Length: 94
Image 1 (cartoon, rainbow, N blue to C red):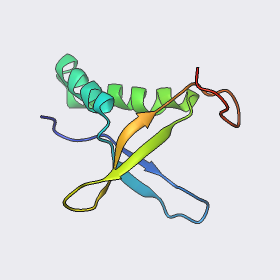
Image 2 (cartoon, helix red, strand yellow):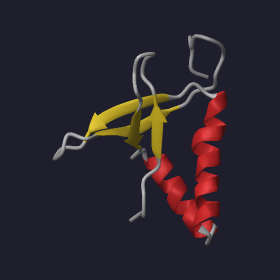
Image 3 (cartoon, one colour):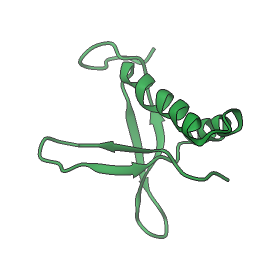
């Protein structure tokens, strides 16, 4: 299994204090597992994952598919959708 899940911190509106939600997207989890095999150092592994899931995503439109844990009702990001960013409003997926 994996040691820890990536998480995102975000605000959903102007008067929101913010949320931190764990990401169980299969690509994100596999990225973490791959980087853990490649980099034996934990800091390098976390840097590589952050570079992809946070820095690289800045040039994309990022959408979260959010669900809840079936036992506890905890919100989780179950999927990331990240088409290219084409401007202020996304009118197509390419």
